[in-house]
Length: 237
Ligand code: HEC
Image 1 (cartoon, rainbow, N blue to C red):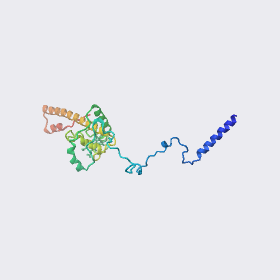
Image 2 (image 1 turned 30 degrees about the vertical axis):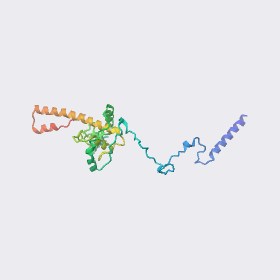
Image 3 (image 1 turned 135 degrees about the vertical axis):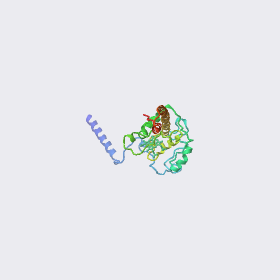
Image 4 (image 1 turned 135 degrees about the horizontal axis):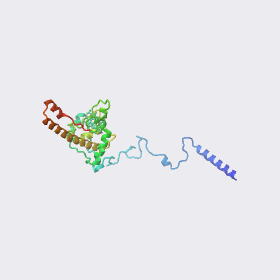
């Protein structure tokens, strides 16, 4: 009895195996839920008979809001088109960029995020304090001088927030774009953080300048060394 059963099982197993080999090696045989295995997706750029315009590649539906553009309740973080322009066009646009203010409100969390991302992406060149002496400059043989973000031309009224944003979007000369790494909010947060570094710098410089002026008044020295101390740049750690 047991033998007959064993034989029956062996034969039916053998038949099943044989049957599954029949369809050829490129055929998967029987498939459970075939609509899940064989997707109906279009290949790239293939025309479609299903859509009205004959295109298989679809554009986003009207009023679609790109990811990352509605945070902070602002309608968009980039109403300015920020196109990549020639130097001459950019120079012409710079005055109107001044009217476009940082759309991200200042907040502690935003400043902390700006600081974190600045330290990750910018300080290697511009330095933790923005003076343009990051490790790439002081510790290696990097030949391009990164901008000193504490230079008077970058201090608050010298260069607009929108211009900083523009530089982060497209880069400038030897500095690359950071649009790949930083979302729109993160770029605006870095701009706030640079402004806070500048405010610290200006405040500290005022203190050191006043101290230098007081020292110079207390011990009059030859004219040339007075000039040198007035011009001394504050070293922010
Ligand atoms: C690999 C080095 C490097 C890194 C990293 C870098 N920069 Fe720069 N950056 C430069 C150099 C070099 C310049 C000067 C470009 C020029 O004017 O030719 C510059 C210029 C600038 C300017 C001045 C643009 C102007 O109007 O002249 C700003 C603002 C700036 N960088 C911000 C940033 C910020 C913010 C980051 C981080 C997201 C960053 N950079 C990361 C190298 C770097």
